Image 1: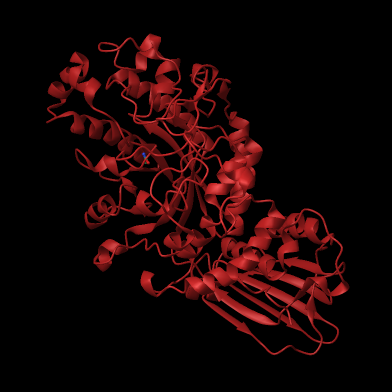
Image 2 (image 1 turned 135 degrees about the vertical axis):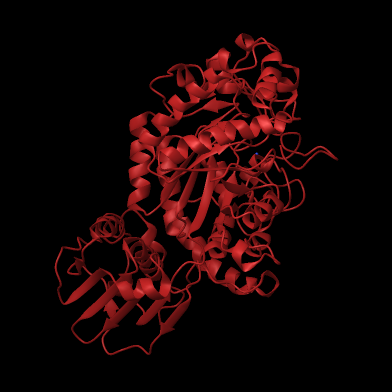
Length: 552
Ligand code: ACM
């Protein structure tokens, strides 16, 4: 009767569709909204988003037709704080939609399910013509809760700046997929994107570059237009608050001690001035691993403490990401200052110098009630005591960290780097990296086999990562991220069977409805049949070089 409306993504734990009751369940202009204690923010979201799509006002109260939102301890006991129970009941003259959550977050995820049940038009920003029965709901009960507490997307806004409105839209897309962590990669060699009041040149100078490599790093082409941009502190506060209303935590990343050329271009004294003329450095205009890393001096530590003080003021997240990836040691090997530091601290080598950096900020953050997370290179030279690890070079770093009792977010590049191509061949726009199809992402397993139960308990969850070297705008980001983020969301949320037994055919069947939701949202996803002609940019732009490593 209701066709495909209950083709939910991510799949819920339990869905029980009852025989159609007498009467029916439906939303209309008289539908009331009764928000229990703690659910006022969810009600605000519902009125704003479902109000726009339906044109209905959802006045407060409990009328003949009503939506009721509640925080319910028994749901929390069974399905956790993010779990929910959604039930719809109807009789001849009344209908009720009840969403009970283990917390306000659970209620919010339940309301996301309600939106999916209402059909693709529930994702529009204004009502479209439809018949009177357009907002019917099937009589059903959904009981649900997530597999993992960390279900994330990392977005790199350093390689290409994504304007604030596009970031807010990305948060809407995460919420629609029940993803709850937005890892915000704010700094890199190619740009510094967050205003730091005590170090203004980070954005005055560091947010802009004169030109940009166009395509893969071996491409001979340049885009000669200046590129850049940054978020003011008020922009960041707005982004964080917008995310919080959607029960998404924004985890900021300030990448140290590598990936720092934009900062060094702004403040040359941060670099290894005894081996390079850092005053001659500009914000980087091409891709790859950059040799210009921070100098291991007290002045650098003080500078970044100042940066992190402002970051902590802006971002309430417990976890703060300090990067730590891809820090070449060549300059430290040549630098008398770095070598003196190694001797003075009694360190074995440059890897331990990197650990010294990270340990400093591990302690510094812990003193302020926060926790450090870094890419898996922070394992080299010894892991800081409180550190958590983003395992990106495969499972191995995450396994080592989890077995040593550290928390881990699994995000191996072989599986969930969404900048990587989604089909073989040269038709993908700027194809880079490993081929990872929608099905490959669907079959990704965040907990590696063979991990002991104690170690597995340290896998906080998983995130997909999106590096934007070859994504110069929101359309390109959409294309790389969707539809694969839908498969990823199901991996992160749903209790799926072992990888090989997953029912990809059923997922694809549900996706036929989900594509219509994405259409209503205006998402420019990769069509199932492959890129449309206007999406292709074949040739020299992106073709990987034979034998080169699979990153850009
Ligand atoms: C990374 O991909 N460099 C974390």
